[in-house]
Length: 470
Image (cartoon, rainbow, N blue to C red; front, top):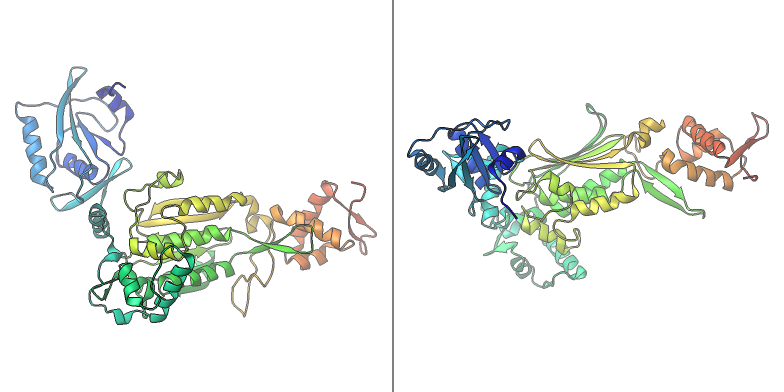
């Protein structure tokens, strides 16, 4: 296969692995550092950022001088390939660098990484992540200086070991907790690692899950902050989420009613697990979960790890790179996660039965934001249906308090209800389904227009019946 020409490189524009510069300067060196800390790349000197060939002037020793400046300004020292090309009578210089095996590389104490088609200045946490990734280390596997094994909860450890053995993914000695933790690298030389503290501490580290129920971005009607070890905080947060999302009853033709939550619970749980297991624990920010009438957001501190991009996640074509290897292994061993790197795939699978729910993932505010949105035709506002409010005077939306049913799941249950209880009126159905009369009347009109039901009797005393003529 023929190699691309310089002209074809220019026509492809600036990318994650290519940048144009009109002249050689310190910005060129910053770009080379960014490439070395990512997937490598090339700088074409003598081309404007719009792809216009301007050319550059070279002296007899220019290329050697450029190479010397790059070596002097980088640590570890970068030695790129430099080659001059002629295009339309003008000189274009190609400066190429491969991905550096031991990261991070810096220039004059500044660190950059190539993301999309621009250079991203790294903060302290991102620099540490790159370093540990290059050495195949994990922050949570380090000994927690200043902490002792006595700070771990014996009961939490016993429960963990029991669950690991029950699920059969590993075999641990239930009579010797210290040996079991040593075997999994949660204890090193009798000292707990950061993962051990995150999973088993008696007094949990202050990494919070802050969660709230919002009516508007500025109106909070319920708010909690959970600070606990990670297995426990997942359960606490999940219970709060479930208590604040609407639930419908589906009828399958029998006397049994089947609950259908507004969002697939497995997908919400998977997104929560991703946030807890893969967040950056060197970032002091909280995991933030916001539940609105028509959408839920889950924010996790720390951008995607190991060079993973949003596009790769959305395409489900990526290789997992773990920021917190020991934490992830703990959740895997108790069967809380199936296998590394498959979380977003499982979220999309769970959403297959929920076409009315849209899932989005984005990097913003120094972290990852997962958003589940009800489409306009199925949102509570569009249906004229509000969230069920109030248990014990609060603003909880309890699964035992009432039933919210949208058009997409409300019409069929209403038809079954009319078949089971013919002759009832709109007001009685509104009470039975815990929705507004207006919503019931809209469903009734749809059923009448489709010929499924008919109204029999006088306007004040009659009721709705199945259409036996259909």
